[in-house]
Length: 252
Image (cartoon, rainbow, N blue to C red; front, side, top):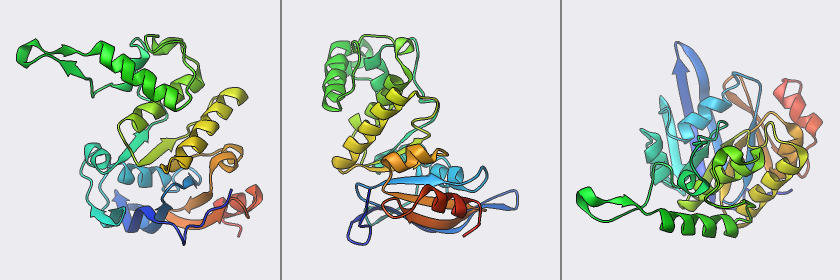
């Protein structure tokens, strides 16, 4: 895939991002850009700084210094809710799903719809199921029923539910941690198709991954981290997996 980052609007940008833990710089004066509608993979060895960056972008940790901008507007994230308010949603590797609740309940987890008033409010189950079905159908997610418990779903379906939950609430930027890890070939392909579809809708996606095959299947570009800094940025239309490995290992 190709990307024209210089011609695109920048959905999310960090300049001079620095984060220190116990005297160790997990991020050291990092500059990153994520063009609107792009799919960017963030790669690097353990401890390279990619997880710290994701936590800053998703509001889990504030940067010690540096500037964050969303669609050109400066932002200060003090919590994940601040990031969500700015249009950034995160799908963690554990997916944060409630196994013994149904698909619709998981789609609205923590943001349940209610009906009634005052102390007489109750869950609007019918409305949540209708909206869940509409959202999942629009994304082409294949499920048995929105009333099915999540514990009965395949790994790919569970991943799709977590992604759909983020998209349903109107995110413009989606961060995903290893979205295809531990999935079989068919299930991974379904998630890849979903990622491609979201990109066609203009949703900017940032994917943390260790798998080069998965990365080259979905990403326009790859940012490689090493020792708390950006070691290189590759366009997947021109770079090879070997090029990326060389950057990860400091051989370029």
